[in-house]
Length: 351
Ligand code: UFG
Image (cartoon, protein in one colour):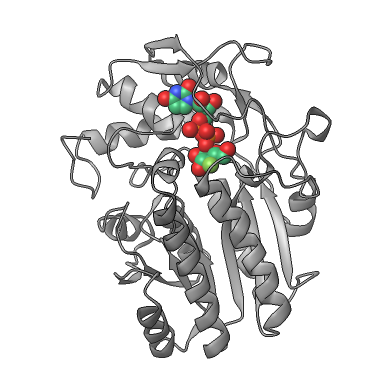
């Protein structure tokens, strides 16, 4: 069974490719390498023993997408990760986000319909829920979609609408949108992990880079929120648990188990942790002290959100298994392995 993984050299895509290959799927990756590195292919091979097929091009190019699907008649399903994902950048350059994230999705859907590829798993995000009303926590798939806080978030909302409309119109198509909470951590081998370009925008890579001495200290964005310790709460999920959820979604489609031709699942653990919880877990599980300072709030931050994963647990037959300490430990093991030159990735001195 061959699965197309777009964005397969990126953080979530590469870990999902490992899991797919280990479950017996053949993977072909398409990635433009805008925000990822080609060495991810070797890293995947070093874990699974098999280098995935790879083509480098921009999925926003309609002709190239059509040509790709025409040449690959054996693809049974698509997992579409490829997208720009930086919240701040999306505010500065909204059209870059709308064009890339939406054109690539529409190109893929058009070609899937044309060439008879039926099954699509889409990377959505808990960002579609915005700041949940307190009575909606933990948040289920039935909670209302709120107006997006940024163009990036809006591309996820619009993408879900494009999927629904396309599924209605094109009878051969099925889609599952997975709404991720906060993926963190790395593969247990420390051969693969999160490798952001430039200064990390997200918490966990900032934590590990600070611990390694790349950054002088972690800035904790505000401790005066309405939460038990004053710092915001998220549902952090181990990247390998998230990877497994994709395999379950693919299986569900290929085995004809969908209840409707478009389905949505929350992919979170069901437990919320604060920024200070993350710091404590990191220090405890790794025996490392982390330098941090409380600074002002970051504009646009959600105060608290965590998943109600009941429907996903029951319907998808998937449950997050790894603990917060597993997340912080694997993230640190990966950072050290990368910095010490023990991985397939070239060390970027500016990063
Ligand atoms: N944080 C810090 N210091 C940092 C980085 C983050 O204190 O240097 C805090 C943030 O304020 C927040 C928490 O750590 O409270 C998590 O922040 P992240 O940036 O790691 O994650 P977000 O929840 O803000 O963002 C994630 C995804 C986005 C998505 C968003 C939707 O990374 O792609 O959820 O809410 F849009």
